[in-house]
Image 1 (cartoon, rainbow, N blue to C red):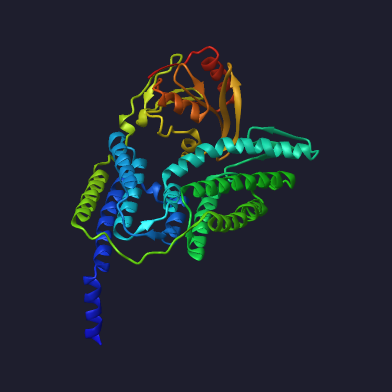
Image 2 (image 1 turned 180 degrees about the horizontal axis):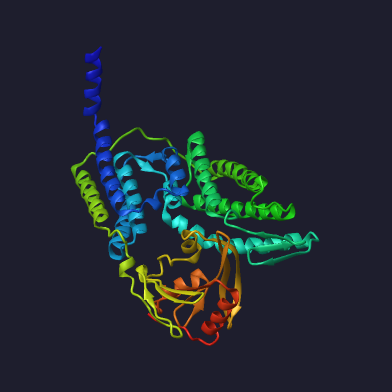
Length: 454
């Protein structure tokens, strides 16, 4: 009996089934080593990555024979070049993701396009986009909720993300159209699509998938709109257990249930028949050598990433404001401080990079935004908000400028930089007293006393 088991094992090895699995694991280990050196722990400890990682084995759906996809290889190389050129870890993360996809497809079988959505949802890109876009969406949701309640005959006032009804004040916080709810919705969408892939033996192409996830996003917006209306209407404060319960109820009723049936309908209506192939592998020396070189390149790139990333390569702007002495910080940030005043100027190196948004920076310092709104000062539209921490309150404002153009719109400043115009800086002014903030905003935006030279 033992001899028979050994014989079976030898035959399996000779058939190549175990060989290409072992080769896959070795090359995958090279990527893991590179990631452990280059990427910060925050990239893999956030909810979108952890939930996505749990779902990943279920989401991997083979639908064809092994191949080397030139598009994925090109995406890997482009992300690798950008990671090396700008020392941006986010591009190394994406390069690793495409590397894993290329390995799997070459050694185990072709993957459905759905895996690309999974990569995006697990990546730091999703975290940044959800944070940046979630903020103006929350402001819009507050306005819409106020309009609905007004149409219902209620006397309600809306200022930014703060709603006032009969003396009751409610702030539309991050839980409303925040990262966690959006992450769960999108990843559950991936789960629902994969479930119907497996039950119907049909798969979707890129176009229907884009349509489906757009619908999931819209369902999320609708869910949060109803959540805000219910919380304000029934005066459910954050310390009430029903606050979270209302969010879960709306998520299930307006997102989870509809997306399950939407996924089933779309797979049935737009899906293409797919027979899951048996395990096989590309059996040629050229592919083996190519993958080995690719693995070595990804490993060396990870080992060569600087711990501080591209922050030290960002040039500081020359900043003049009154008689304040500028202090240069990491990441190209210039700090000017006075009694009760903090002013940060943060250059944005490229149109595709992040911009040290106060929505993340102040949160990292332990502060929570309590009130955010748009405001007009000196004919310029800016964001203003209040920050709370341990009973203390700060007043803050921010906008983007390159000297010629001043805006709070993400698309505007990114398009300006993409067209080759002067680089933008994020200006963030903060004070312990609102009157001090207002006075300095007038000096900066009306009297143009702040001079920034990139």
